[in-house]
Length: 98
Length: 197
Image 1: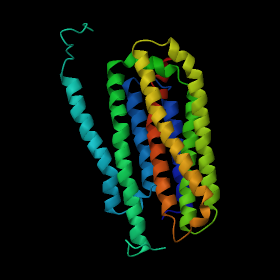
Image 2: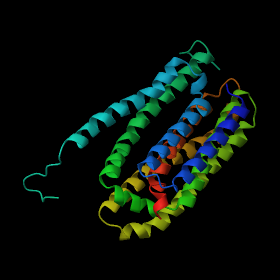
Image 3: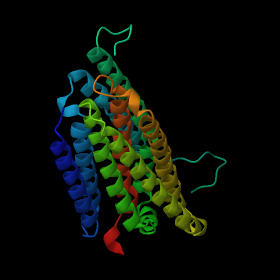
Image 4: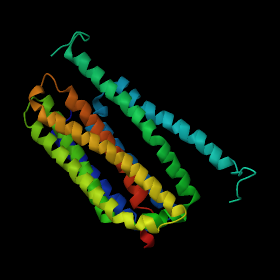
């Protein structure tokens, strides 16, 4: 069980990350803006999962259950995008050319 | 409080948490395809997504993110207080539900303001709006369920205490999950090439 002060620090960290992600969006960095935003989102998600959702103090069973969905989503993303990235979209013979 | 299928409260609490985590894994799969669609749209029609993003109300979106993060904090405090057997958990639950309602109210007013712009949009920008309404809408449905759930716990607060707090704990897990989904939606829709305007 975490202490309320830990929750308070987690909350402060989340708000600091929110300020950082919002401010960084106004700095022109090209594709890095997206990379930074996603990295910060992952950090925020991790803070919530570890402290608010108690994964830091949970046993292996809950941690595995928490990661299973994400792991399978990752596999599905990679397999789906392998198609989009490597194939041309061919319209059917009767369809209008894009 | 012990029930017939478990030897002790500890075992029962573990089963409840595992059940909620398994449900959250299916929720990840539920939201997943929309994220995949977003990734494809964002790469294939980047300019249109940047244009659509400039129509978002960033002040309201940022405020809403702060509100939702704060509601997760109050929810964590509610779970903590109930584990300690303190009756203050009821106050924290009420605050959490109110913050959830505030989020939904602000989101609704955003939808209201955006409705006019959507009717003017065309082509790939429409795909941005489709994903925006589908993803934030699905999130809002989840949050509404969360508000009802937390309100229901608040109403029946007498039932819970140090010996029996699983319902509050698993409702908390659900609430935090919905919060994490929004943490990703916020930069995906509000923050694309903000510097360009």
